[in-house]
Each structure stands twice: as C-alpha cells, then as structure tokens.
Image (tube, rainbow, N blue to C red):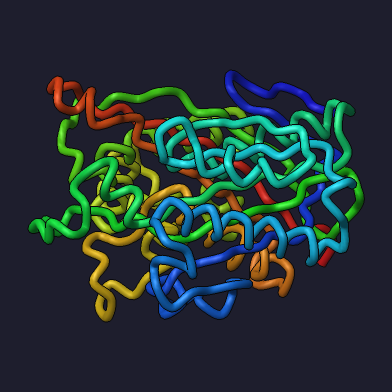
Amino acid sequence: MTMKIGKQSITFDNVYVGHGAVAAGPKEKLGPLGAYFDRTYDDLYCGMKTWEKAEMQLLRDAVEECLAKNNVGSGAIDCFLGGDLNNQIIIQSYVMRDYDLPYLGIFGACSTSIEGAIIAAGMISGGAFTRVLAGTSSHNATSERQFRYPTEYGGQKPETLTFTATAAGVVLLGNDPTDIRLTGATVGKVIDAKLKDPLDLGRAMAPAAFDTICAHFQDFQTSPKDYDLIVTGDLSYFGKEMLVEIFAKIGIDVTGRYEDCGLLLYDRKQQQVFAGGSGCGCCAAVTYGYLLAKLRDKTYKKILVVATGALLNPIIVAQKETIPGVAHAAVFERIGD
C-alpha cells in the first residue's frame, strides 16, 4: 500500500529490494569501493569504439548482472525505468532496444537513480507491477564532452569541479520478500540557490539536498539519529561542506552520520578527481553496489539516500541562467536483526 505522508513524502509497506548490480570504469575500479562492483574495465572505452557506446556497454553489463544475481530472466520484469545525462537519454533508450521490456525513460540529472527507485516503488506498492528494474549510467568522457569540454582539449579544471563517474547501476525492486525494504521516500522540489558556475555543481545542489532532507525529517517526524547513515548523491567535498554548514545554522549536527557518494567512490588524496565524484552513475554505483551490501552484512540497518541533481544544460548556461538543483530521498531498511 502506498500512502502520502506530510507534504511531499510517501510510505511503502510491500516494496522489497533485490540485488543491485554495478559496472564501472578504471578509476572506479581502483577506488575504495572497487571490490563491490560486479564488472569493471581498465580503460574508458570498455571494449567499444566510442564513449557513448562504452556507456551503453556499462549499462548493458549492469542489467545482465542484475538479472543474473536475482535469478530472473528479462521476461519476468514488468518495466525498466532509467535515464542518463546524454541528450534525449540515449544510453538507456539504445540499450533497451535489445530487451523485450516496457520502458520508461526518466530524467533527474544526477538524482535519476533514486527518482527511478521512487517511481518503481509506487508502481509496485500500488499493485500495478510485481518486478521493476531501475537503473542509470554516466561516463566521464560523454559528460565532459556535453557539459564542459572534450577531454582531448586538456583544459584546466578548478578544484571545485566534480568528476563524473564512469559507472552504471541497476536494482531490482518487487513484491517478492527479501531482507531489505524501500520503506519511504521524499520527492524533492526544484531549488535555485542563484549560483551560476557549472564547474561548482556540488554547492549548486547542496541547498536542494538541504530542502529535501528537512522535508523528510518534517514529514516522517525523524532526525539524523533515526538513521545509521544519511548519504547524498554527489555533492562531493565543497557541496558536502556547504550542506553541513547549512544544517549547523539551524542547530542540527549531521557530521556523525552523514557521507557523500562522491567522496566514498574515490580516494581524493590518491586519485585525481578534484572535488570528488558526480554523475548519475555515482549515487547508483555506491548505493546499489556498496550500501546494499552493507545493509545485508548488518553494518547498517536503516539508510537515507538523497540523490542530488543539477538541472542545467550548456545552452541555458550560455544564456547566463542560474543552475537549479533537485534532490530525491529514499529509505532503505534491513528487515530483522
């Protein structure tokens, strides 16, 4: 059963989380979480001839691994929900050519992973579907080419830059009981902090994360102490720092229970990733690879995942517009001890 709670949140009582799967690139393979990924590559081409086809391969790998780990065929899946950062979300659409599956393409920028999970949970909780795949992907080179400059340019990058993850993550949600449930969600609003620097997206998204987390606390009558971990999608170093400061100003200390996927995915001291990770694949890889594993090995019991997205494109930035953000939150909870 699905029920609205408060102003912008939802509770679910029968949405179970199956196994997730992650395919990742070379930097992600060598990062702190590399052992949690199902397939990895040693170069950005992933055995393909173009960056875009490489990202398609990552998503295809994640889909196949997810089906295999859950011991189901694609015929047992009711729908696939996915999106990416490329124009017209072509990665998901082109990969889905190979599957006889109903498909819903979605876009929430880097918040897409949790947006997809929330929509899937609603479909399942409402009784329309029994098994849904939610997935997303990103690739460092495809994103750099579209949003900044092709990597071949060798342009200088500031320390505030977030490094787009080369990864794809897919998860199975359904009504077949497992040891993890998706118990609640908060749908975020578009928040514009009036920032304009596309090379500092972490701080552009931080106010949206703050707004969604506050709404979540208000709707569910909870606080940081009610979660083993609160993790944002890809604010990375400067955005995380800003979010901690905003919460401190209203008297809430989140430091003991708060992390960011962009900082978990890489070792900033050893890897050249500037402020840390970003991209649709960042939150998906950390959540569906690492965090689900930590729920299952009983490190955590209840996690609030807040995926963040910067809602911009190069055309609107060239028109001197600001960069709005959005954040969507989902609660993943282990059942039993």
